[in-house]
Length: 243
Ligand code: HPA
Image: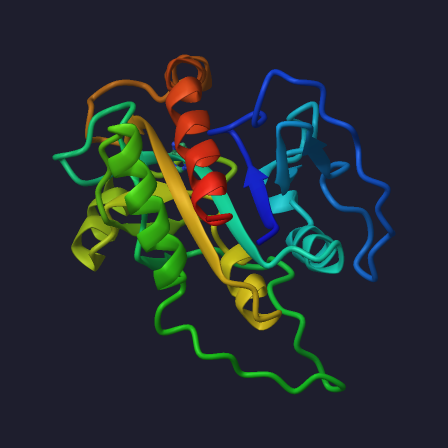
């Protein structure tokens, strides 16, 4: 199985080894965020950074359609996405992993569908994340001794962080983590029939939860600390899907 790994703030890359760029076609939707890369030691993965290689593409400006279309066009069988998120649930701490089972979409104005007059499409999205991929991620978490929990991903528009009241509302809605990039990515994958799952890294308490000012520099430190665990989980997952 070839897995498209969409990395973001939560994962800059998959390994230390040189990552050759993959010759990739343009897309009908314009350029993807970055050139997809393959790692010598992980032949069944194609890695794409949704924020661009220099981390310059903001969440509301990401060309989600181009990214998902490109991975599909390169022949991936599934997508595993990595996200940095804020923790809404008070049981979550910085550095925790969440493999979400549900999404609530609070984004607006994004190019969010492949459907159109010549492509009449209403996909079932009752379960936005693929059960089989989530199960395999759970097995990998077990094999590598990495803890994780289930959760509901609330996707906000950004680029600003949320207000305390917005987080309280999301909490009442049932969201346990908040991020800015799972939508429309997950829905676009569904429209193309690509199984999709995600791994969230909690990098801060959501607004009003930790009574601290949210600073990207602090979040980066959590990401840096968690990189080896995230890589271990994904490398094991990539091995498992080959077995
Ligand atoms: N809110 C939205 N997106 C995020 C956050 C947050 O608190 N942390 C990391 N990505």
